[in-house]
View: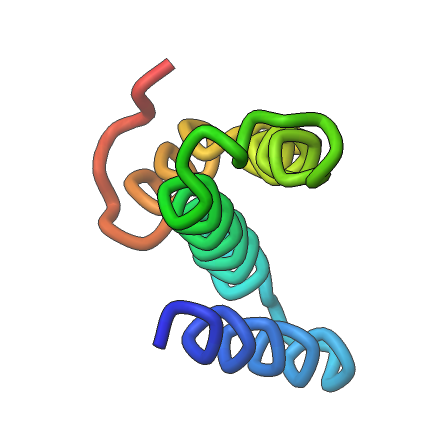
Length: 95
């Protein structure tokens, strides 16, 4: 469900971009959803494999490190949430 939500939001952002419309909200939400789905998948993989999830021979620990990167680069989850708060929810700027 998480992957499907990320996919749908990505497609909506691409559709808006291709149409020349504003797509900042959709693009930010797509990245947020995809990075969180990726992290949960990596965490589940480590949990499933137990201690072997940390063994370099299985490449799971490397994948988990890589998926964590998606939450901080190039835009962090906190900046995305700040954008949503300011531009979608019309809250005052938080930084």
